[in-house]
Amino acid sequence: MLKFAGGALALFMATAFSATAATVDVQMLSHGSHGFSFEPAVVYIHSGDSVHFIPTDKGHNAQSIPGMTPDGAQPINVPFSQEKTVQFTKPGLYGYKCLPHFALGMVGLVVVDNANNEAEARKAPLYGAAKRRFNELFQDVDSKNGK
Image 1 (spheres, rainbow, N blue to C red):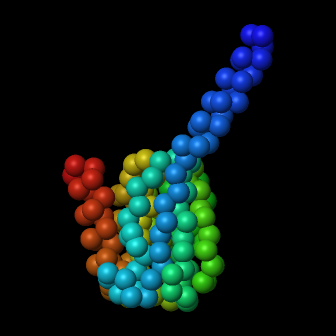
Image 2 (tube, rainbow, N blue to C red):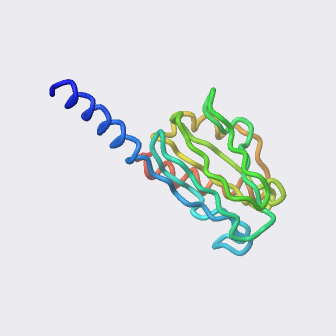
């Protein structure tokens, strides 16, 4: 009986931990609150959680920005006009863009547990509206971290 109870407990624990992982929806929009935008633009999740990218308006993708991903983490790569769920297992800050609308400021951040690579991410080469938008997003991250 004890052997069965131990096995049942292990199964319950595995199920309980997998059931706690969350998924956050991010819409890819042509007419969002900031024009071409990801909404929400900043997502706060925990390791093991996922982001579900939804092309609410067609013609958008989501891809990592070089220098704005934690070392050793899988880059974000959501094809044009396709839904995709991306799981994040490495803590840190992930910056991403819509390739054709990057210069128009269509960018976003995923913060997994903490923004421990924020200083490195801020060094990524950015320009125009994307740079201005990231400055706003970093302010949001800093305010959440008490900076």
